[in-house]
Image (cartoon, rainbow, N blue to C red):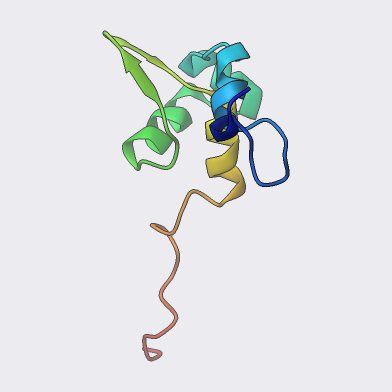
Length: 86
């Protein structure tokens, strides 16, 4: 195993995990999160979750999507708190 595939804790990083991970379809990802397929499409459109386009098909790596979900989908939707009250 190369040094690049080890994270700071010494475990296996995402690069090595992806080698053994099967990419999921929209339907499979929706079933995993117990949401509608349209919700997955919305998350994609808002760039909340990463995906890979292979020709005309779209696939997801669960480790990457889980990271995005755990982080709260990034900062794009956070409410501004520096505005004065209306």
